[in-house]
Image: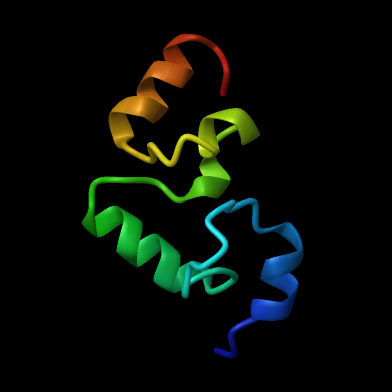
Length: 67
């Protein structure tokens, strides 16, 4: 399977500009899941900007009906 990095970058909401995985979704998922996190694209813009990508932060946002 060929990576669709150029297409992925058009919809990538990650605000961490020096990220080497930006647009490479499979690597991004692998990295974040290994650290008990979700990628930035799972979060609303203001929550993503905090860089708290933890499962717990995501669960709080779901409980607050923000996701």
